[in-house]
Length: 106
Image 1 (cartoon, rainbow, N blue to C red):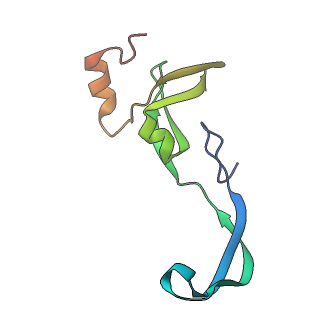
Image 2: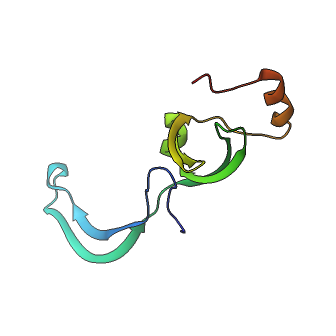
């Protein structure tokens, strides 16, 4: 699916853009008037990242930045929903992971 976070389910929402004129009363004006409303979209900030899964494989996922900041991800791994720490995979990280052993002590 396009424009949807695979973890949190955030997707595009809709709202209004309100155009106003005038000066606010607290600034000495007569108040703000609405001159028009038009539809607009609010889109989530999605990023495609490559992560390590607990089974040792890597996977590309499209997630919201709020998920990246939280540092925890819940995905289907081998048919089972698992929650695990978010560890990004990068070039050359396969050799580094082999040296470290298991990243997930759970």
